[in-house]
Amino acid sequence: KAKESLRGGHCYFTKEMEQETETRFRLLHNLRKAFDGDRLFMMYQPQVSVADGRPVGVEALLRWRTEDGAMIPPDRFIPLAESSGLIIHLGEWVMRTAMLQLRRLQTQTTFNLRMGINVSMAQFRHPEFLGVLDRAIAETGVDPSNIELEVTESIAMIDRLAVSRTLSSIAERGVKIAIDDFGTGFSSLSYLERLEVDRLKIDKSFVDKLQGDTADPRLSEMIVNLAKDLDLEVIAEGVETDEQLEWLKKINCDEAQGYFFARPLEETWLIEWLREQEQRLL
Ligand code: C2E
Ligand code: MG
Ligand code: MG
Ligand code: MG
Image 1: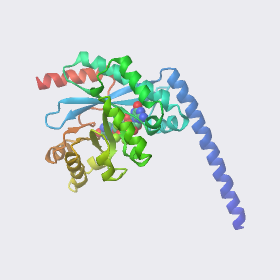
Image 2: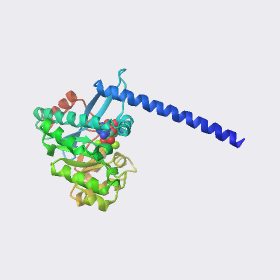
Image 3: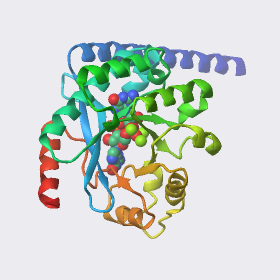
Image 4: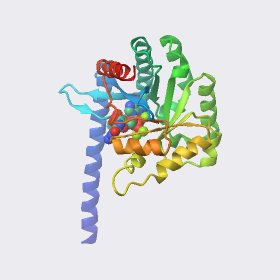
């Protein structure tokens, strides 16, 4: 009897897996089609100074709009693009699109903005990565010091020598590096000290705690202090309320990003938002 139920369980499992493989396969097929058919586009979320809300940059965030108008979030298709190798072309397109957008923004606003571009691990480790970066910079004519690549802490867990070499090469070009979702990966702090990075992005999960009667600013504050000790800049992600912003001021966090200031916006709305900020700060 036990054997029977075991086998039953096994069959069920296999069918589930088969279905999942099929779903992934179909999704990947559709993703390639979407990429070729211009159904992928970028949105840009403002980043501001905590002190006065002055815009300091934007983060480029990838979007997929299907033919029936539905939006598929990047968390669902980026991992798929990564495991299939599509991320290399897709990542190159993202880089160029964001850089061209920055050049356009620079003619449309008086703020000196930087452009944050997410780079996944597979892209970062690809042998052509620096070549792709150089070509994108050269062909878009963007100032490298206004570009900030966002990588997650997990890159610090892989081949350390190769990673620190790549980071140094990026720094040589004047391009900035931010560690995204900082605090969730727990890489060794002594290792972090030796890496050439410019900014820590405090993960939203810590920012969520700067809220309510049971607010707990300890981890956010630790990250801010760590950044200061290491001479790094620091930005808080996922700021949704006034109360969170007040905490960030109290713990001396430099910059913030989140729905409280602005959601990710398409170009037209981004420019409109920037104009409003210019009016406000005049
Ligand atoms: P991330 O780089 O940590 O981006 C921040 C995410 O938080 C974005 O989600 C953004 O829309 C969301 N967010 C910002 N402010 C708030 C807030 O106040 N509240 C809440 N609830 N969420 C907020 P999104 O756009 O869905 O992107 C998810 C992740 O997908 C990104 O996390 C990044 O890891 C990845 N991703 C997005 N675009 C790209 C891309 O072009 N290339 C690569 N490799 N990865 C990307
Ligand atoms: Mg990011
Ligand atoms: Mg993040
Ligand atoms: Mg994230």
